[in-house]
Amino acid sequence: MCTFIPNYDIMKKLFFILTFFVTSVSFSQLYVSSGSYVFNKGNVVYVTQDINLQNSGNIYLREEGQLLQGTTSTSTNKGLGKVSVYQEGSADNFDYNYWCSPVGNASAAIGNDSFGVGMLGSPTTTTTSTTATILASSIQNGVASPLQIASRWIYKFLSSSTYSQWFFVGSAATIGAGEGFTMKGTSGTDATTVDGVQNNPGGIGAQRYDFTGKPNDGNITVNVDAGKTTLTGNPYPSALHVNAFLLDPANTAITGIAYYWESNKATNSHLLTSYRGGYGYYSPVTLGSNGIYVPATFDAYNGDGTLNSGAASSGLVIERKYAPIGQGFMVVGNAASSVTLKNTHRVYYKEAGALSQFERSSNTNATVNPLDAVGVEEVPHFRFNALFNNQFTKQLGLALVPEATDGVDRGIDALSTRSEDLIDVYFVLDNKEYIIQGVNFDINKRIPVGVKSEANTTFKFYIPEVVNFDQNQMIYIYDALDGSYHDIKNGTYELTLSSGTFNDRFEITFLDSSLETGGNIKNDLVIVQNNSNQMLTVSNPNLVAVKSVTLYDLTGKQIFSKVKLTPQDSYQFSTSGLSDAVYLVELVTNDNRKLGQKIIISNGN
Image (cartoon, rainbow, N blue to C red; front, side, top):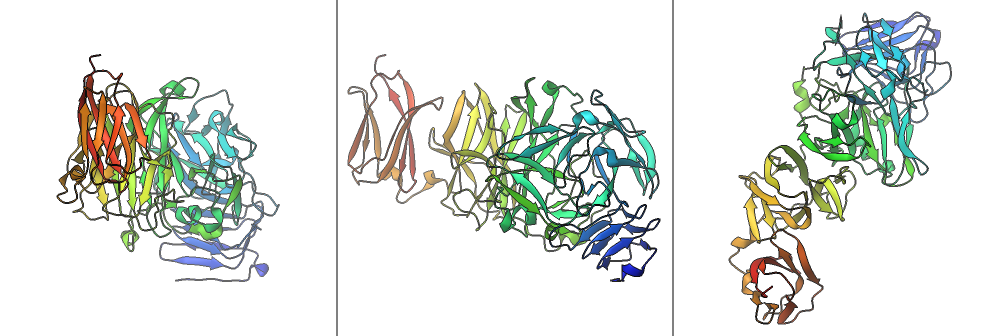
């Protein structure tokens, strides 16, 4: 440990070179005079109060060097000098990244300033960069060398009680601290290599940008609104502890879930109808956990911007606990209010670590520190996959944690962004569609799974991964159509459905109730179809409390459902007027036992 707490009021020059052998450097205040600089190579500089960067007095953060501050509320940073920090985004000029700048305009004014893409540069040496050229909005393609950014694709997404939409930014420096923005990558290559990394190797590589400006600091407020999304992200020149931000007790105005944009890098087109992209879902679950991230299933779009149909899942394995410098993401509001990003949410965590990754084609920082694995808290969960027509996969995540209730839990349950999809699978919670759900494990618990289908869609259900949970525990999917249970942990369940929405047919269970030997529901209730009288009869001699009796045809279409039944020894339901066919009767008791039985109706129709 090497710690310096000098008095900078009497200093005229400042020059530090920090090496890998120095653990950290901390200052009470940091004043960098004109023509001087701080060079931080792969370590952390911590300043408890303000930073004053005089004209041409700079701070260079290199090889994952980071800057943290301890200001408790409003930033008092100032000066015409700049912080310089690198970050790599997609090298493909057709693909978006979601960004959030760690810096704003360098000025003598006190506090955080707005950002614009004209502040980005292309590194030439470890301490110099060439300022990017910002192309007119009529030009679609950015270029790697010399760096030219297509302003056509620079947008931010803001939410409040009065507006919620994409706002074109272009080349303007109007992106406030904590506001995320979109930017596409570049075409071509840039062979310039700084700190052992090429600016742009082309192909599936990454485009390096130099963010230069006044470092953001202190409390940064972001407006949100109920049921609306807001694009924000990590606004600091250090890593952001995403769990700490999402689960902050003062930030209850958001659902506690982060949504990350992913796109299919193989789709090379600016045309909306050719685009493939979607949102991945991050649930932090608890402050100390690694959370659960479910990757995006890519959407296709119509010319008017509406959803068309699904395409192949991204399959990206991205850790989200720590957001690297520059990473943007969406949040969803619970109320028309605001949330605050704080210095207490900042941490020193390298992107090369196991729990942090910027969303792009590849990670140029391949080194993993083995110490990152120490003390890891894996959330007990399993991933539930649905393969559609043997073409693309939708994944859900079920967390098995004592913190979860049977209702919607902030920071655990992730609401779907894909309600328009014609083919989909999701958890049914509070009559809405969820991608991640948390439950307090009970072997008798049953978790409803909803399915949307087009005609003759084949679904294959299976469990690809079980994490930090009893490996001996069976996992089934129950199909109410015929009352069958299917082992999806060790096998698959495949079926073909007609068009429709099936929110009451499938459940994930941990017991196969059809194997019960004592107290079997079949001993208590008897289902009989009397075609002579055109009547369905349910005999209930033991006066079992019955919650519902539902009749389906074999396509899964509900014919009728009788609920809130009073206990009696027999129930009768008319089947007159129904077509001659095989039907399924599903009976549910108040203690959630289920009985499914096929019947044949023959009315001579």
